[in-house]
Image (tube, rainbow, N blue to C red; front, top):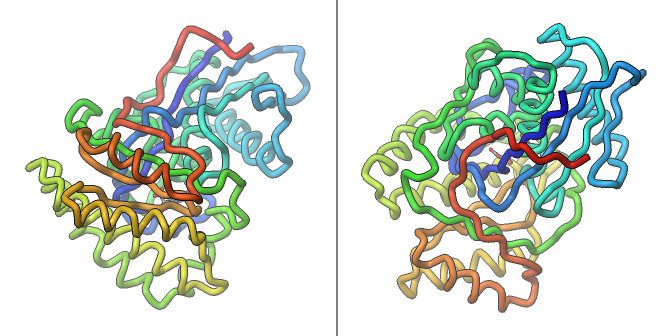
Length: 326
Ligand code: PMV
């Protein structure tokens, strides 16, 4: 059966950086994220008995070799986990530039996992789907459930899953995604995470995460945006402090990244409450409540290094749609 899924990218408020098991992609710590409404991947999967191997096309263009390899590995893994036989044709389309931090791998592997399992006619729970998606790309598990999502760290694969903490309608938060560079990053997250233990800060960071998780859930419960924003920024800086002190050091920021950070700090001083967070790339996510989103985008768009602002609200997770790419 031909099946198409759409999955959102997500932005982590509590970040995932580092694994305790490389092949199972078991994270060192819990993480919490928001699904993004305007940064999505659409993927169509169709099994065909005549195919001798999987065929993967990216909206008319062929993927890079390493991307194909990761996708076919995930399909082989899914075949093994579910005893599905046969090969499939897969086509995928992003609503945003690829390689902007982790966004495309999260939405990509979430959409692929859902479309693949349903195209094969498998009955599968949301929890299992998050576990399967995690094996393709860690952050992809957070793109399956609705809205604001908690990914639990654990020692066994079956215990490290993601679930919806709050639905997308719970809080009118906005993410103004500011693109300063559209190129694919030079150091992929999986490669960057491999040397996480070389940072002198990693142990302190991981030890403090449980407290941060409690605090952020408190901020959500009270809808205390100041508390939420302060945790988001502190968390971003904590992850980048680890990245910068790894060997080899990972510096994902560019001059334009700092320009945006400064603009956010200035906006805040003028009473426009906004907080920044950054993944493994130079682009900046500015988190705010709805009433400030247009103003932030207007101010930031005027900065010379800014190429594009993508306005996101909290979105539902991966879902099946009845239109197809092919
Ligand atoms: O899932 P990956 O391998 O793309 O890793 C994502 C890591 C960060 O984006 C840097 C942080 C996060 O939690 O999303």
